[in-house]
Each structure stands twice: as structure tokens, then as C-alpha cells.
Length: 116
Image (tube, rainbow, N blue to C red):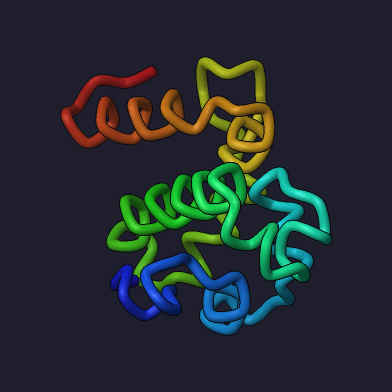
């Protein structure tokens, strides 16, 4: 997933992310821990919080996509695979609770051969 394909005017565009993942903008919002308004109202889409959450989700998907072979499979992992060492929580659950950096660190650790 190239970052440019998910942006409009230098901002992450929920609709473009949703199109790639074959889902809705509302679902993208939910999986990033945002409300529906965050992806429907222009001022909310441009907010720091919305852009940060969308960026975190895309960064995680970009890191794991090569393992799974497609953005769709990476998205399925993000939503449904419990991560060891995180009490059975998925990457999506961790991102929704503001712990995206821990997910990225976990992925880096796995890539480095350290098992959580």
C-alpha cells in the first residue's frame, strides 16, 4: 500500500482507504477507533486526531502486508488475529485504545526474530 494512493491534498482520505480494503468509510473509522462523524465531516477528517488514527492504521497495514500478500489479508489480520503478549487483543483493539505504537513495536520485534 503506497501512502500516496490513500491521500487527497496531503491528508489521509478515508474513502480511498475504504476502497482499497473493500469496505466502507464508516468501517474504516470504527477499526481506527473513530466515530462516524470523523470520516463524514470535512473539518473532522482534517483534524489531527482523525489523521493520526488513520495514519497509524495504514502504517500497521503497510508493515504486515508483505507477509500476507495483500492489503485485504493484512486488514483481516489487523481486525481478527490476537497478538501474543497483549491479553488476546487484536491490533485493531490496541489501536482503538491508543496503543498503535505498541503494535508497531511488536511487529518490529517479530521482524527482528524476537517473539513476544
